[in-house]
Image (cartoon, rainbow, N blue to C red):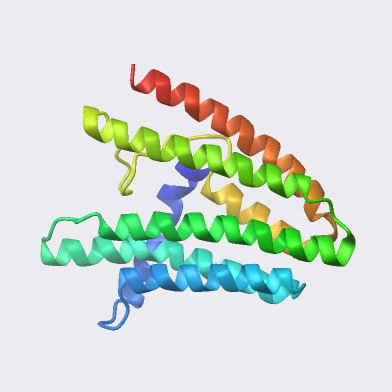
Length: 208
């Protein structure tokens, strides 16, 4: 919901940060790998009920995810090369793994520590599954039919109620308030489900 509004404000900062880390040994693919490692680390720390280390790992994971794209664009602009799409594929693959793992990690930790019910977290995973399927299906068909939505990212993203910024906030709230994580998850599952329904309708209309 807030991504379209935040992107013009955060892009200059991320571009400056990408320039600051632009070193031969720092590559976009390695930043994506760092995103994956820190995301899995956050999931493991949450499962072990180390909530604030898990929060730190989660935020570092999201920072790495925010920098891989700007660094890739910076280097392509300097070299004049076309984007082969490999980085975008690696990025979205890592994100899907991280989102799923962090939900499971929080669910395991919250259940062990506070007796939280699993159902809200299962519903979050279900809603993520639907959103991911819709995103990939729309992007693929839009590419084939020449109806891409180009906002600088590798895939055509349909806007919705629950997007990247909201996901960062909600996953952080789980780790700050782990005793209420299942309540937050229940609300989040509803919002992501509504967002998925909206994306299905928006995608159908965009491809009509």
